Amino acid sequence: MKLNKEEKNILDHFNSNDFELDDSKNDIHVSYAKNTLKKDKRINIRISSRDLEGIQRKAIKEGLPYQSLVSSVLHKYVSGQLTETRG
Image (tube, rainbow, N blue to C red; front, side, top):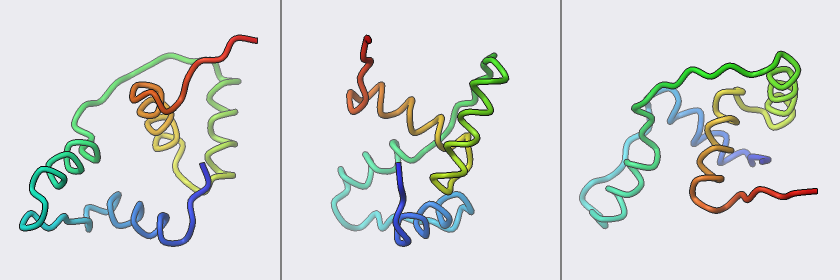
């Protein structure tokens, strides 16, 4: 996932807790956005060193923290935007 300058700026503001949504407009959409952007649970997983290094390399190429890349991939998979392929 390649982020453009505006998307990187938004991600930077969000990650620095400098990101606020205007609750006065489109309340239902604001609620959906807040719930989507809210990261309120923490998980611990064990993966191979090779996989972690691969994830970190891809994250560097995309210009984002590797944890954000992992979170994004998981979100896309759960929401149906990313599907498993069998080769």
